[in-house]
Length: 125
Image 1 (cartoon, rainbow, N blue to C red):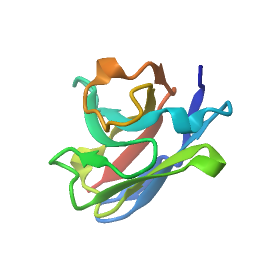
Image 2 (cartoon, helix red, strand yellow):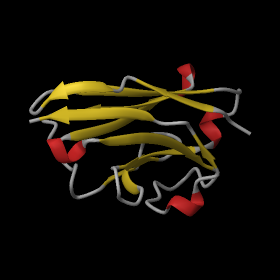
Image 3 (cartoon, one colour):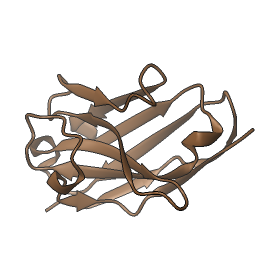
């Protein structure tokens, strides 16, 4: 089992940047692929980005491709989401999640067994 805690959210102007962090407990962080998802007010939670256990495979939603970068540091038990050129439509609660299928970078929420509490990102126009 792994516990996840997100941080780094906040209020930023359009065009700005934020870096989200996801701290994982336990000594088996490298056993999991990691994903970032987000949920805007009144909308369903959606996939943002995912990374395999080694970092060798990454996937992005079309809406963030070229602006967001997912990464991980297994020695620090942490995953990150660097967000550049932020837009008001990026406003959402961002969640990190862990997937036991560590060799893939899945976009499917149901494959992620563990979830953090979320961190709010608000982008003003």
